[in-house]
Length: 191
Image (cartoon, rainbow, N blue to C red):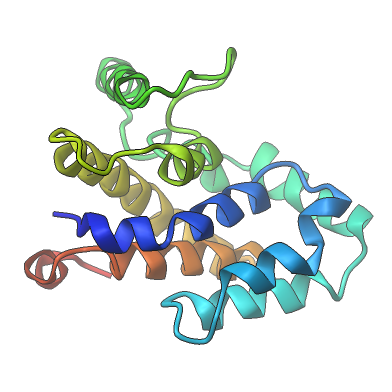
């Protein structure tokens, strides 16, 4: 289960993570959002700082090339969180529909032409949704976090093998989510 208060505390982080996983633009690398979102006591600080420093060592053109090569042309590094995990079309379709309904329950409209398991969209949902005081929040957000954790586990491993600068970003997302998991659940997770 998810600690909703802790998850809420990191809403800005999820917005930042989402922006870093969309096609890179110059404004995405302005220091103000980074500096206002992350402090040394953030659970993903060490990883996100490493990602941020690595990205500032290369040009925007190079970042865009790495992004496209990594996320648009490699099946193993897709940003669709159920693509590699749910291999049965029916099973994946059901999960996509479930996530879409969940987003709509909390008042967010799906962008046309986008699948509901797209990682930047899922992170944007965690950032933008207002779930405080909603009795459906714990179960719903636990599902979203579970899908992200499942999908990013293999993604992070492959990015690490490729020595991709995005490895540290995915690692920061996972560390932030782990900080939001209630202690009993931490024991049963494999990493």
